[in-house]
Length: 100
Length: 378
Image 1 (cartoon, one colour):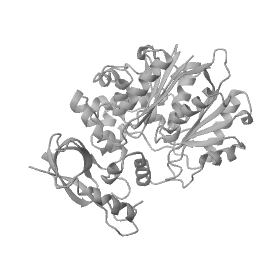
Image 2 (image 1 turned 45 degrees about the vertical axis):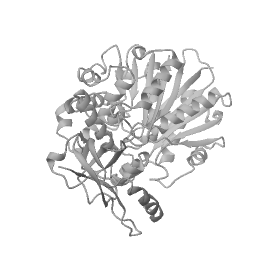
Image 3 (image 1 turned 90 degrees about the horizontal axis):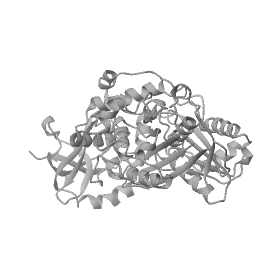
Image 4 (image 1 turned 60 degrees about the vertical axis):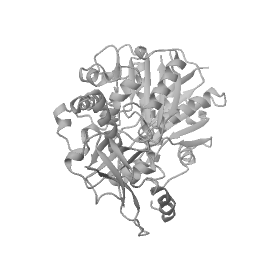
């Protein structure tokens, strides 16, 4: 499912969203993951409204339980998103980190 | 020219390891032709509702695949609109008859899901979501969990109220011999079941299911026939993040408004409805989007049993819904139409809604990116 070409193409877009602040609009803790995410479960997926006004769905990382609330301030960071496929290329993408 | 439903058939839904998609489609297509009172060679076109044949089964070209199985050489095509594939196939079949090109068309919805491991099915289903959602490791339970939390926050909807949707639908399914789950459950069982994506627990979620359903639509008018008095669809953003309000599915509101207008009826006229309860929260939102209850009031209405068998105003998901009858994704939209068709014909047995003369189906693709609404009239 992971195409190196697709990763290369999409990575150009990631920098536009990096290091932006925002607030959690909604979140869920995923206990039953899809293929490629088994090693990360359970993990939190959140929709965040960025200061630019854009809304984005990504995982929340480096969080405490107290950060799991609607309205929590977060910042976008670059992280590995899923397990590398047969090509061995590690896919990176956007995740959120709480701002205390 | 009204479009008449000549017949409607649903296969057994469940974990059907001993049958193939070919078996399933042949079974329902032959039974539908039999019920319509003619042989399959009267069929002039075949519309197949299916989502995952390619990503899970490795089989494309489903139109020809099934027409070969049915011994036909007429136009046949797969319609894919995620979990709304079945409803969309019926919508296009309806338009095909309206066009005057065909007199009798076969609509088949089919999905074979349990041949594959759950992680693979969950990943394949995410084909219905956005690229960003896939990158986040979201699943469909996760997307509806995001919706549920927003609804809880805005309207005070509780997990206990959501649980009542599953309790009701399992009760209805206990009267449906074709359902995947015929066991009755309690609110406590739902509340104590394992969390899939918080706040949704496994008994808030529809299962992975094999199954098929078929309808024969016709331009031929019948005395006392069941007609499709509206068939409408709409789309919205693929991803949830692009939506300003997570507590409503805009496509469902838009398609149902158009459908009420086409049929010349109001929400309060509907006696029986099959709605897309892929998750318990989805049925609550469907009730509000369809205009059956004001925004924020559906959860308590469902909790009070206002949509359960036995009340005279409106009964929802007599089949057991996706939750308990099962959710073979491409078949679901067709099954919903078969269920309402049988209700209007008065042949639903123990789950019959007395005096059902107007029914609605609400079929959703993805997390609300596609909505297909049908209104059926006696």
